[in-house]
Length: 167
Image 1 (cartoon, rainbow, N blue to C red):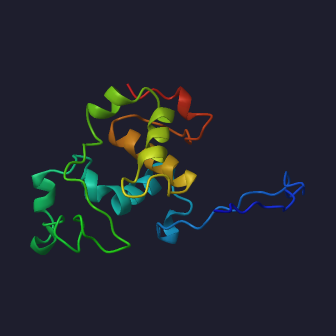
Image 2: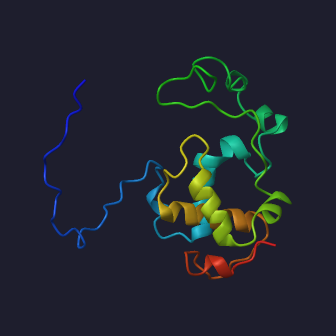
C-alpha cells in the first residue's frame, strides 16, 4: 500500500493581524436584552437554554418540575424526542440534572471565574462550549444572583470574576 505524501509548502503568510470572527449566536434573544444588565440577559438565556434540565427556579430536573410541562411533553426519553433515538438536530436528555440553586454551587465552585469556566467547558450538556463568551458571563451572573451573590454594579469578565467568591 502506498501512503500519499504531500509536497506542498507550508503557508508562510503572516497571520498575526487576522482576528477571529465570532459566529452568530444560536440563542435568539429579543433586542430588548441588548443593553440589559448581565443578570437580566443571563436570566433569559437560562430560561431558553438551561431551564429544561435545571428547572425554572434552579431546582434541577425534578418530578415537580416535569409535572408543570404539558402532559404530552413529559415523556422526554421516548423515541424521536430526547431518547436514545432522537432527530439529528436533537439530543438525549439526561434523566438527572442537578439543581443550580442552593448548596451545590458553593460546594463546587470557589469563585465566579470557576463557575464560568465549568459552564463554558461543560454546558449546555448537549453542546458544551457552543455559547458565546458574553452569554456564558451572563448566565454566570444570573446563577450567582440566583444563589444570593450580589454583584452590585460589577460586570463579570476574566478580570473581575476571579475576585468574586461564591461561598
